Image 1 (cartoon, rainbow, N blue to C red):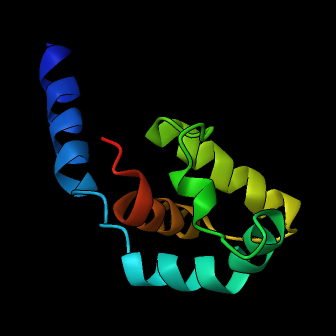
Image 2 (image 1 turned 180 degrees about the horizontal axis):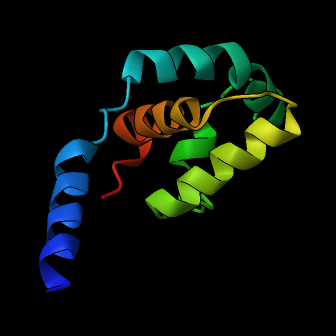
Length: 100
């Protein structure tokens, strides 16, 4: 039977995959402070967090937040890993956005 090996392989792959590691909020905050605050301050007359809290903010979903952080990372010429992006997104969501 072909079904048994397929089920067995799928089960083993699932067992080995494990849960995704949790985002590191402290690391996200450190990256944000080191790379984002200066630019955001210059855009908002010294009030960088107002970009996240304004009523007409662009970001309204986690997917949108992920895209925006990636856009900023690329425009600054940074070379962050996907995990770095995830950490910054998690930090911004925890601190400002509260998206689900």
